[in-house]
Structure formats: structure tokens, C-alpha cells
Amino acid sequence: MVIASIDLQDGKVVQLRQGAELVLQRDNGPELAEEFDRYGEVAVIDLDAAMGKGSNRELVKPLLRKAECRLGGGIKKVEQAREWVSLGAKKIILGSAAFRKAGKEGNGPGIDGGEFGLQLPFLEELAREIGRERVILAVDARLSSPGSPPGGYEIVVDGWKTPTGLDLIKTAQAAEPYVGEFLFTNVDREGTMTGIDLAPVRALREAVSAGVTVAGGVASLEEIEALAALGCDVQLGMALYTGKVNLADAFVRSLNWKKASPAIPVIAQSPDGQVLMTGFADHEAVTETFRRGKLCFHSRSRDKLWMKGESSGNTLTLLRLRADCDRDALLATVESAGPVCHTGAWSCFTTDRRYTGEFLQNIIAERLRTPRPGSYTATLDDDLVREKVREEAEELCTACNREEIIWEAADLLYFATVLLTRAGVTVKEVLDELDRRHKK
Image (cartoon, rainbow, N blue to C red; front, top):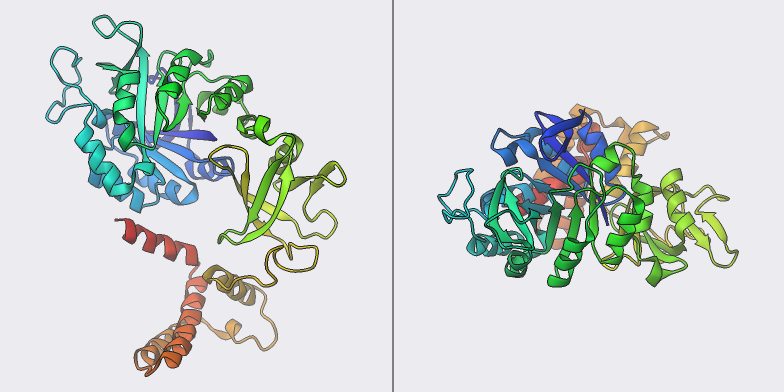
């Protein structure tokens, strides 16, 4: 998987060299998150929170609903992590809090003073509260400093300023029971685009079975391919923003083509998760999918590129593409322009579309946008729809049996959805709020 990074500082998207020197600055975080989400998860890092210099909280929150985000920066308590998950963060990235002992808040080297040590009780509690699969441990490391374990890499914290005396490999092995993934940043290479050093990556990959994402110095597609061959994901920052690496090309190179060659299976699904069709895609088809924004396949019978709907017009607009855990299968989330199956059915697996809240809202939105003659929905202005919601809520409360409850609940759901649609609120936003409450 290719993960694009959005680093936040002073309310802006930034890229820093060696964690200090400002190289570039942008102010379009939401647009970047939406674009990056097409290719993989997005790493959102609040640098100010990480440095203890404030917070970009209000800038972070909308990003969590625009993309599948892994969030890091200044998360020191289980309650903070749980709140961010409730707000939409898919995973939580931990840094200094996992290594600094309680009550040791100074920024000086802790090698002699005993300031640092892997905080296993904290990691265990966090894994229990939000799930081990949501926990990413950032093991930022550089070649060991004098007085530290020789010949290895030493974990550093506080914006890479403070050495901990903790060995990269031993610490990762001890933490693995409580984390689903490690984020390894080679601090010596970070932001320099001088290329990666595969030696510590290989050592970490061989030492743990949890997922490993690599950042720091990645500057070419060949390096991304080499990391994928080791079974590692890659997080891109400077190389992406400076145009040295293209996300679409990086995505293609990160797939397991050796196992899936010559074509990789693709499952297309609607935004609400209903399976539409399956097909196969080679390098060209995946590249063209990103270029056109429409799902493309490799036709095995004709041995050529084929864009779904190129003759019928029933194209599949790409929203998001994801590789599975082995990187040898793809899941495409798409918007269909019409029936997907060549038989005229909505899906290759079922004749009719499953009736969902999103489907109901799409119908209502269309009736409000382009009213049909005699359309009742189109007559529902703001005052009338609110009156109907109150009326149907009362009727639901006085329903006497199962059949009446179903009937009145359907009425209430319909009018409530009209109210939402007229107010510009989506059903998904309501479900997101319920999801937030469930996870809080």
C-alpha cells in the first residue's frame, strides 16, 4: 500500500527537511486528503501537537471524514486515541508516549537518567480499548549514538531530537503483541530524497510479523518496488509533493505482480458496499483507471485494455482503490452510471439494487432536483416536511402492532430523509455520527 502524508503545522500542510527546515507549505488539506484517498490510506500528522506547540485539531477533524486516515501527533493518552477513533481516524500512530516513562516530561537525553523505556501497560490498555489492529507504533530511528547499543538503530523522540537508548529491533519485538503495525522512519534520510537504506528495513521486517510501513528518503519507484518485495508499505512525503514520485505509478509498483501476474483480480463495489462485478487488471489497466478516473480492466478474451461501459455508457467512476493484505487483489469503490451487468441487471450478482438509506436519498435528491409531474416529494417544502416528520413520529409512537410499527417507521424514515436532503445533510453523515457515538 502507498500512503500519502499530510503533515500539519501552524494551520498549513507542510513538508520539513530533517523535521526542522520548512521546504514547502500549502493550505488545501481537505482537497489533498480527498485526492490521496483514491490510492490508499492517508497519514495525517499534527506536528504542532507532536512538538507540544499547540494543535491543529480543527483542521484535522474534517480530514478524517474525507479519507481513510491514520492519525499521529501528540497522542499521549488512551482517552485521546479513543476520541480520535470516534471522530473517524482508522488507525492511531503513537510516538513519544510509548517510550517515555510516566512523570518524565523533560526533553533531555534519557539514556543515563532512566527517562525512557517501552511503556507496555500503556500499549496493552490502548490495544484493549481501540483494538490492536488500529495501533501503529512509530519507531523513528537513526544510527546509534555514542553510549547507545553499538551497530544498530536507536529510537529517537521529540521531533527526532532526543535519543532514547532503545534499540529498534528489540523494542519492536517487545511491542509487537500490542500493535498491528510499525511505522519506521529512517531519520538520517528523512526529507533528503537521497534514497532508502534497506538494511534496517530488512532487519525490522525479519524481526516482526506485524505490518511495516517505511518512510524517510524514498525517492524512486524502484525503491517502492523493492520495499513491496520485502512485504512493506511505503509512506510518501517530500517525493510526492515535489513531483519526484507520482502516486498512481507508486500504487502500481507496490502491487504483488509476481504472484498475480499477468493480471490481478479486481472487485468493484458501490459506495454502500454492494458488490457489482469482478474482472482482471494488468499494469496498463490500473494505470489507465487512475488516469481516466474510470474503472478499466484487461479483457482476457480479447487480450486488450477495456474500460467498463466504453460502449454502453454505463461506466464506473473510481472513488477509491485498495489492495488486499497480500497486494495481489484489488477492491474498487465506484459510482455506476447505469446497470453494470451485460444482461441489464444492476449488478452481475443480483438483479435489483439493495434498498439502502443512501439509495433512498439518491431517489429523493433526484426528485427534488428534477421534479416529475405529480411528484409528491417535490411538493415537500421546509415547513411541510417538518410538519410531516412530527406527524409520523407521533403515529409511530402510537402504533399498536408489528405491522403498524413497520409501516409508520417507513413513513418517518422517508420524511426524515427528505428533511436531511433539503438541508444538504447526507445519510452517511448521520451514520458517521452514530459511528462516532458507538466508538466514543
